Amino acid sequence: MDSILFIIAAVAAIGCGLNLVLQKHPISSALSLIGVMSSLALLYLLLGAEFIAMAQMIVYGGAVMVLFIFVIMLLNAGTEKRSDKSLFAQIAGFPLLAVLVVLLAFLIRETQFPSKVSDVKFGSWVGGTAEAIGMRLFSQFLLPFEVVSVLILIAILGAVVLARKEID
Amino acid sequence: MTFFLIITLVKIAIVFAVFMTTLAYLQWVERKVLAHIQSRTGPLRVGPHGLLQPLADVFKLLTKEDLMPPHASKFFYLLAPFVAVSLALVSISIMPFGPKVPVPGGSTFMEIADLNVGILFILAVGAISVYGIALAGWSSNNKYSLMGGLRSSAQMISYELPFTLVIVSPLLLANHLSFRGIVESQAGYYFNAIPRWSIFQMPFPQILGFVIFMIAGFAETNRIPFDLPEAENELVAGFHTEYSSMKFACFFMAEYANMVTISCVATLLFLGGWHPLFPAPYSDWVPTGVFVLAALLLFAQTVKIGRKWDHITFPIFGFAALGLALLFAIPFLQTYLVPIFWFAAKAGFILFVYIWIRGTLPRFRYDQLMHFAWTFLFPCALVNLLLTALMVALFPDQK
Image 1 (cartoon, rainbow over the protein chains, first blue to last red):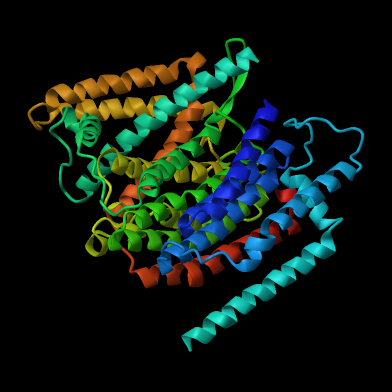
Image 2: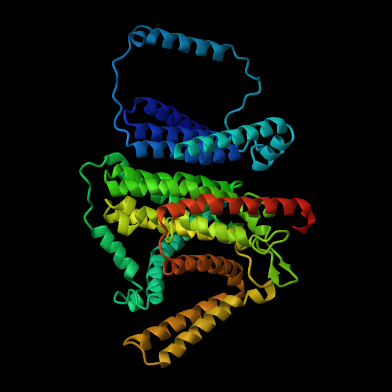
């Protein structure tokens, strides 16, 4: 059951990812990206990270992608015009892809996985609750958390400054 | 396992049937209440007092011609109503309507599922459901639809901020993310009289929070006074201008389902869910009293000279109310029905406020709407959150 769910989510993620690149229309691509985000959320959920799964849906699936779609709709972007394939892509494309695949296969083969690997099973790990993540964030990872919050504050200020400049 | 499966299927069937009936009749209630606010009678021809109007509307919508605009992008045009309605209907599955109750073969909670991250699930579904409207507006290939879609996405993103911030405050009081935990933290009474719901709960009552939640909720569901995405005098019908027949009905149903969801969430977060207004010994008999009162009122109306059929319909409704009162008086059924009565009463009151405001307030202008969200509602929600956090930190034992 859990493996079936995993396979469904994984296939959906890969399919949506491929569709994202292959589609010509920006809206189709953006929707495929939402599909990728949602399948990732499902994978997180299968691993027991329920808080991260929901945050993924709210932040990436919702807020970020709505902005993408909003901009695409506002500009009313038409179908993408494919340029001719560049000479570099024609010559080096497939060899580079082969190298990448071989490299990845080699790395996966050589990685020392822990000997005690179990199947994907929903509920086998329950450390992903909001409470557990909050405890970690405010004790073990307090410094990075605060640094990130300052970074976000700077980003917000930057956005305000940019927006103000345009009005004046 | 079998017990779990059967009981869940039964619960899904009950919730689905009740939810669908509520959606159909909510529209009848809205037309009736609006009509009486505006000194009209509302639907009156189909069945007694127009009670069969929802059925007639369903048949009307099913038999209408299903139009397909020639230059719409077909896939997204068909996808949009599906996204809108399915996401709007899914939220009801995690609402708890009552406490743990005994059933044949064990005991169960009065809800379909209890998520550890229930409130985040609601936010996630709300965040995704913008796409239904945005896609509908864009794919119709119509300038009014596009304007409606754009307005709704901008409005929903803007109001999601105060909405999310204000949800955090009752969570601080409850110290829980699942709806069941939130409601259970609101049990009990101060001085044996004032319920410990979030809007009354010490150390910081969430009255301001509740008001902000309701305002943001109105904007999230695109209702008057924030129904800019479908403003008739500017945009024909906004994002669903090009939709007809059942596809239009999908958007219509989604709007009402979202209203019900917001009312349920407000009930659970701020109004104590299924907890009664009065301490337990009296509250079990309140439903019976209410229905007996309703029956007496109906019988009193019968005596007056009214419309042609009133001397027949009013007694029938009166006897129906008496029957309900009897049902609520049976001690065995009280365990199940009384929590649902209180939940439905609170959610129903909020739904009534929705309709009441629709009959009272005019529509905002678009710039007013945005200005209001960012320069007034957002700071208010932030101040409410900071004060709540401060009070909870200062008086942790008051909770």
